[in-house]
Length: 80
Figure 1 (cartoon, one colour):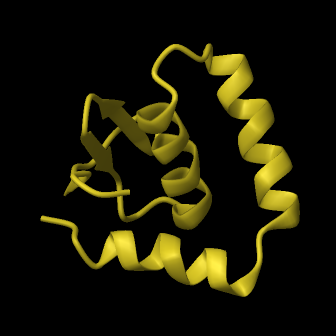
Figure 2: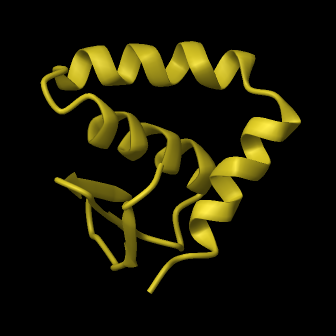
């Protein structure tokens, strides 16, 4: 997603957060790429509820291709 800023931050109770075009992600999380997918969906669809994002994350994660995993991993390459 163009214009997306990914920033590393440690969290105590969750692994990611999104606001506008910024995603904060805890790189120590056990499901790093799934968290990136979840937070990217929040950024792409800001009006969706948390429940809708969770449902869509699960649906997309079940069908994700190797190419999709690589695209998510490339977002991590932009972490500041």
